[in-house]
Image (cartoon, rainbow, N blue to C red):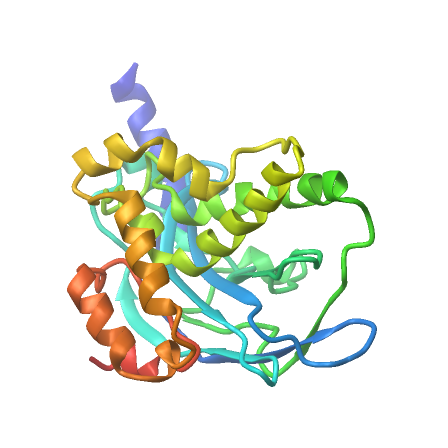
Length: 282
């Protein structure tokens, strides 16, 4: 049966294998404001991810090509540096060798306590998405002003609102079985937003609010032994040390961040910083 299906599977995947095997991305810069007052919002957590997809129907999550995170400054501005060219990881089984970026990437996730989170994508028509994605990726949100709205409901409703954000963050941070290379420590790519949403969940707990999905911070802590055995070190120690380093407001505007990332051994799995070109140029 396998010998019979192999030629069919190969024929189905050949047209998709013509897609780019290396990708790069242009810089992204945008501004975040309050939707009502139009005033800039500081300390908004922003995550950008470029997700590989493939398989027979082309929609299987094959992991992240690149992940970056940052926070907005006092003017509400954030930026991500250009990256690439970077090759698609090799070693996928035959049914996933059509791994590629689709035309909706990058995804931008924005979170600030008290506001409705945002999940932003490129907006493409069905016609535009029929062809192969370009090797140089751009964001429709580059140069734009993004509005965030305050959440108007109660704490229980807000917990429900953020439950899907937890799922989206897990999609970015937690290793999928199909992802290459296999590295269970990839949650270290987005420590800022994990800490921010973890603190929000502490507010829910203090008010005896039950939320639908376990927050990523709590999920990582509950699997402390697993991640330690996989070589990630202590989850508690990582975030405790990270909070200590990030407590200084100048942390993201100096070379201290680069030294910290080097010390933690995160060069291969982490890209960050509001002014992050210094990190990527190291």
